[in-house]
Image (cartoon, rainbow, N blue to C red; front, side):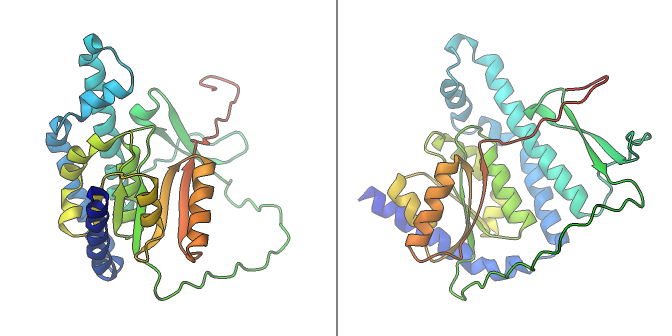
Length: 285
């Protein structure tokens, strides 16, 4: 009975998000920046960091001994808040047209222009990245012409809501995914929390309050594989985003195809397939 009720609530959330979709798709960059600034204010208010028992539960999940929880608890708060703050500041700067990357004084040995350094924050302490662009006037080797891709013919009944399947490996990933789909792509988002982290609901409801108040974000708990599958294939869902294994992405795609929803798109981060490029010299990794 409880599962039926929770699915009914999730369907009500989807209906509310779907109704807000047309106006949100037409929102201006300035409007989305203003909302991002409101969310950033919520992060800086810090009320979320003490909401519920999520910090204690995070440390338990990470198998940290009870006697040592004070420092790891502070670290959990710091990493979570810093990453969200950095993401929002970067989005606001980039969307407002402000230069967010400075060109470095020296170009690379091959003449490539270098931009940065970009601090990677608490997610990779002490690490920085650089963006390298082709040398001025460089002409890339010609590649054989490719036929233009066929545009995806979306059905008029396709859903307008993006379903984010919250990550289980890091607490901050789900909310970053929500911000990306909602602010960068102007999509209303339903976040389904990972079964390992139901306690993230209290802090996320506080952080995402400006978006929730606009009916463009909602949060629901995990109620098992059957309900998750029903959400993925729901007629009001037009996109699914997930962090997980390749097997999970394949299963979601197969589920959508079996349900006659081949036009529902999927984006995914599968196992942090992040390249590390070693190079010689000072600072080489």
